[in-house]
Length: 134
View 1: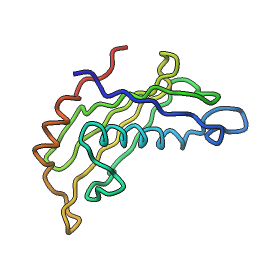
View 2 (view 1 turned 120 degrees about the vertical axis):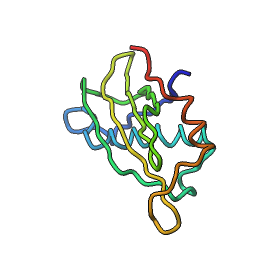
View 3 (view 1 turned 90 degrees about the horizontal axis):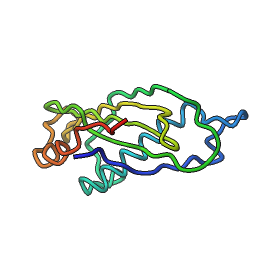
View 4 (view 1 turned 60 degrees about the vertical axis):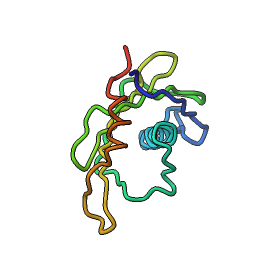
């Protein structure tokens, strides 16, 4: 299956005085894409979900992102462990890759210790392991 695709919107407040998206804002774009993925693919509302934390986050910048407007975000899940999964992202504007990133999420039990990834979640995520075509 193809990766999940959604749109995030660059707002005026995201820009620095030079008109570039501030580097810290990219993490918000990844979070927005991941939230949409979880809502649409797994029917999970992260505001109510609890039990999942971001263990790591990385972003690589490939081209400046300037001005407001839509950005296409691709999301896929290249790795799943026993208690965690890695989400990969690619952000594009007008077909040009501007950034990519990864987050590793860990599932926690009620004592806040790592817990096994539920089988239903694992099965749904398995359908989204392929990156976008270049």
